[in-house]
Amino acid sequence: MEKLPIFLTLAAAGAWTGAILFHSAVVAPATFKVLDGDNAGIFLRRLFPSFFRFGLVCGGLMLAGLVANAAISDSIRAQALALTVVMCILQAICLGMVPAINAARDQGEREAALRPVASRQRAADGRGAGSGARRDLSADQLKNESAGTTLRLRSGNTRYPHPGSVGRRVDLRHR
Image (cartoon, rainbow, N blue to C red; front, side, top):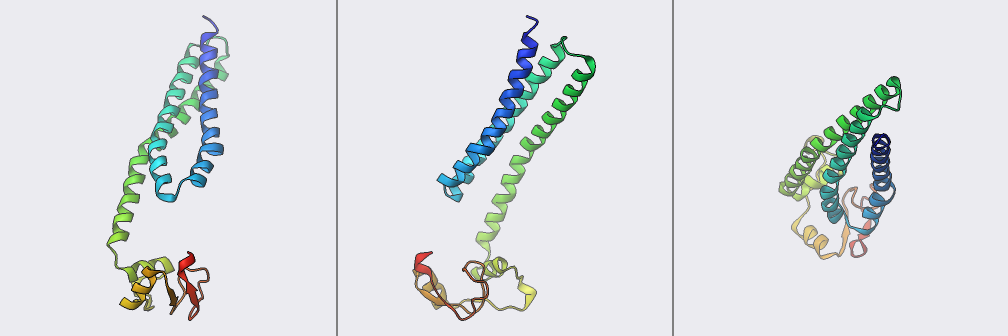
């Protein structure tokens, strides 16, 4: 019975550390390698709250084990308790931020979908509406762009390989 608090503390710390390392070294790279951007976002939106909850559970188990553990000195216990409390607070902050981050991203996507095409292109170029740069595309150019034909660009755009590609011909069929 005396070894249970030690086991609980070490098992929770190991599980928590292992989850962080596994997520960083395996899950994140595999997610972005296998899934496209939209599906990776859906997957990570589902994963992160569970990941942070798991950290809180491990932190709670560590706290319980540290409080019940009489085998370690008071100074080491106090340091371990403080560190574990700080880690739990950070996990709770991250868990609380997930809905706000998701809402901000959703709001940004909604606003981007509502902006006219020319405004989106100015924003992608890093130029606002007041910069004096005219980027309005004609209906023929939009039709050609959506059909995947070759366009003649009037000015640079970050969407194409060379930002200074004024007057260059770009084949959009291979993009």
